[in-house]
Length: 95
Image 1 (cartoon, rainbow, N blue to C red):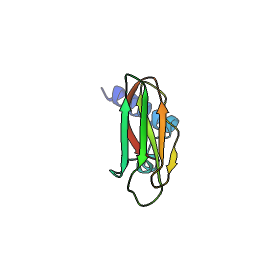
Image 2 (spheres, one colour; image 1 turned 30 degrees about the vertical axis):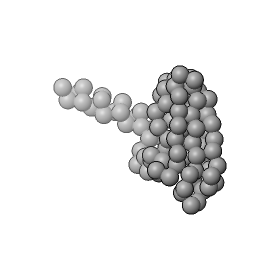
Image 3 (cartoon, one colour; image 1 turned 120 degrees about the horizontal axis):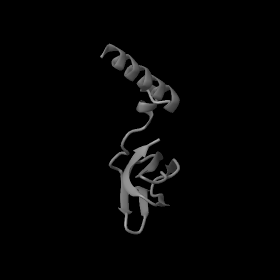
Image 4 (spheres, rainbow, N blue to C red; image 1 turned 90 degrees about the vertical axis):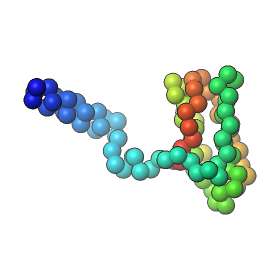
């Protein structure tokens, strides 16, 4: 049992090193603030984001499950972007 635990810890640690996951990357992205509008349609495969009322520029990206995420966009007040995708809309995060 101890050997299995040691192997599990080693594999998990190697995975964190390879993916770059860790405390630094976990703090850089979070759910986008409520002042960023979101709209999506999985049937058509498109999503919109809009800086509605943030009062400043915000950097966001659209996360797609089983598909390609959008690039990280800087949205000025009132600016909107569209992302076409294959997959399922998941969320909008800061970047």
